[in-house]
Length: 340
Ligand code: KG4
Ligand code: ZN
Image (tube, rainbow, N blue to C red):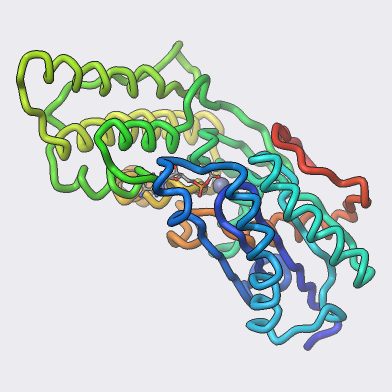
């Protein structure tokens, strides 16, 4: 081991994945362990915060010990501990923050609080070195944002959803169609079997706006189903899924394309759970992979959904900038994405 190598232990518990990972020099995954709770929440049709917190408490020690074992490292080898401080479910966040504080205190290691979305964006640095200026399309269960970065640790949200996040819309439409939680992957699969035959709205908002809105689309799907039922018409779930997905992708890709042109970025990054969507990945590749001077980075599925390697990667930049949290670090469910 090189004395100057930096090893950061990342911890992520903001929603329904208990995760720990170790990242070397901000770019190389040494260990990445994720314990998903999806099975426990499925029967309730969504994440139950109290159950999420309890699972995190049960899983955290197992998960971080597994990460340390995989990495074959001791605490003396670590440079710092990075943990998601927000946004997310307050009880869930608290379990990770308290575990990180305890470990940092016991092993006399620096503690670094990380924004969950900064983590999603930095998952891309585990794939390729970031080049600035860049644009990140962040699409998750809780967020839909276009983030402009002029340098490491600098985040400017140039557009965001005014109501539902893309993933939230996927989950709600899936629920209406009687599909299990989380609905995103099920709609994605069905969409590929169906045809976008149903005309659904696209919320472009005002000219030049990079903001998004998905609640009207969600209501349009519900109304379409309701009207068809009243008229005794049987609509195919796969065609609804295909039409819904076509509308979401159309808006995401078009607005991203306009932002890429406006901000003249060198890279376009994809981040968040909805980045696992096959239709979206294909549409982005088609639109951007041949654009001159632009590199499109799409992380593998395992780095798109919640994980701790992304938290360690984002924490690495804070560490290099000398930013540290103290033991007053608290869970912050509404934490804003601000520059480091
Ligand atoms: O980033 P993430 O793991 O958690 C949050 O920070 O929110 O994102 C979870 C979201 C869920 O809404 C889930 O339905 C959605 O990502 N998702 C998908 C797909 N896989 C996961 N949405 C559409 N297509 C998918 N293949
Ligand atoms: Zn997430």
